[in-house]
Image (tube, rainbow, N blue to C red; front, side, top):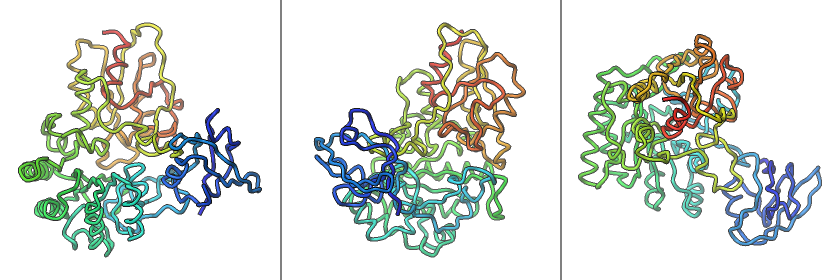
Length: 455
């Protein structure tokens, strides 16, 4: 178990007044050793706490004078201080097994840790979940959690996870729901394995056994050119349409019996099936927006000015967990300072996006009363396969595309493909052959960026 290391202390905060410094390792809070940032948040929330710290190899105790609930004012270097619970499943469709070589080491870590599910929205299969974990989730009200279901048939689920515990681990889902924990589910559909009758059976099983689930997303598997699994393949158009028919049929059932649709198909299915996206109201508040469900419709609402605030979970959602590092989907993503325009910019604008994003953006931009804005589609040669989502655009593909574009234009890049100042392949925006503006990945931000240029 490693010790939480302080990386930042807010000036004038209780931590600062007590003498806590960056580089200090916190051995204990009130005599207890924190396991993770969840313990950290709960324990530093108390009034007048004692911190046992290690500085330069020497141990000392700091007394922090503060009110109950007052922020401590310190940030630590990681979310988990003990060992990350890694995944012992061997799913054929696991995207981490399909990553190219040479990426950042942290990207190859397969976690199945319920704490990261709570903190960052990662999905857990519950195959490594225990009674002790259940007690902690329930007593700490660690909610919501996100659970990979894939199939409710025990044999199909065990086969998909390549783990015999996959046949029984959904008992923990039932226990979580029994204790009032909010849970969102996920079904990754693999053609010929858990689609068709199996998908029908899965949604029927959800209704019978887990009707308290907050929502379920049904999404297609992603396949890069590095996949070595012969049984894994992309959906055909007809298969995508069949999945949508199944989801929409069960939406009607759930709505009739439970008063809500519960199950939603990922946006990729509508693009694969060449069908229109459902209305914004159909998504019932976009509960699984960050999982690619309703993003296209939400973007349209934002871009057309039907809302002035981005829809769905945004970066920094867990900023209230004091000390939690800015990592994962919800982390602040801006990697470059956007160009600050003092007056209206007359340059033509190119909006860079992946193939799926281009199909969403093209009709929206075509509806503008102007001819100086265009969509630039960035093919994903880095991952290859059927990867067409904007979040997986990398610097190499952007550089190749921008190298064929004229200089002197404005180029807008969505921040969803940037994390901690870098693209997934390690490149930075400053290394691209054309200057780019990194903007938030929502319709409000794009609309405002375009308002700064001529109409």
